[in-house]
Image 1 (cartoon, rainbow, N blue to C red):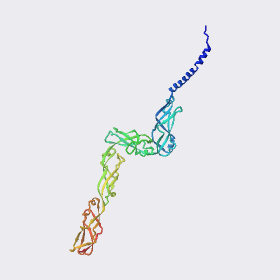
Image 2: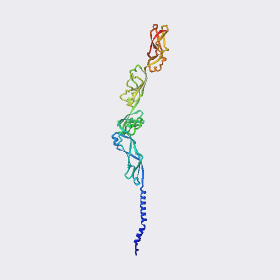
Image 3: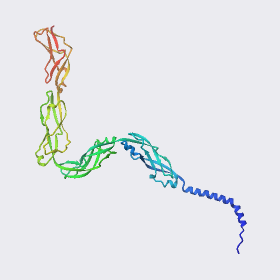
Length: 411
């Protein structure tokens, strides 16, 4: 038998607990939000080494400008947002960008960095707000490719006589400040233990005057094939062939050929017949002073130099004739008197200037006390003008004496 349900008592019970249940519902909702908020709170996150990109690079190209610094700039970026959103962001989703639109001249520019982050997070901060960018003019230069060898070849009686790159010239381009550092462009070939002709691939390297590689430039070709060949060689002395004589006022003291030996290549038969290499006639009449003078070699038709760029010079030391004026005291003048009478020299100055001529080495040691002045007075010279003279000095010519006319008067 079913028990009768008392609806009225149930309604009364609900009315009685409604306030309590409403409070419980509110507490439950609050707790739900707290739980949800605890699971996905607002957080911040830092990204290091975010690369900076450059917008409107074509502006630089049109102005023939190139960026030389910074090379690969990065920044640190901080974002904020819901944790689930923040941690779904990758470094590649963050954009740090510099607009090159207004960078139209070479030099330093401080440009703003623009930041972009995904729509569901917010940009908070960055380590840099702007970037110092340095631009330089871009130029091109053409260089001859030079081949250099390293290492010891197998046959010591041979040399590398042929060094021919397939690409004889290359173009170097880049910032003017770096391209201008390039002294030459070289290929380095290792010939260790080689003794036969071959073709090798070699890297093309731009180097400065210290033979260090120049970075930050572009080469039209980075490597080339180099043909190397070996030939027999011989070292022989250089013989100077002279024509004419040195000028009369020049005395050659020393001649020295540099280098005084030369390495030549050719077939064995030709090399065996050569004991020296003559210079082309060297004209001594052109020598005016000490210095280095270029020499050309008279090479037989079937031999060549190991180093075709070799420069041969002759260093010559000379002694030149010059004039020199020396002031001489007349107090010690010698009077060669043949009159038998006492005489004085009227008009005699305290000092006279003696001009002499001779080689520099001789005049360098000539002083006033070595010049002996004298006057020769004959029997009938009393009352007449006579001339002051100087005694002969070996290898030195007396050119003139100032105020050299005096009058011989009886005392």
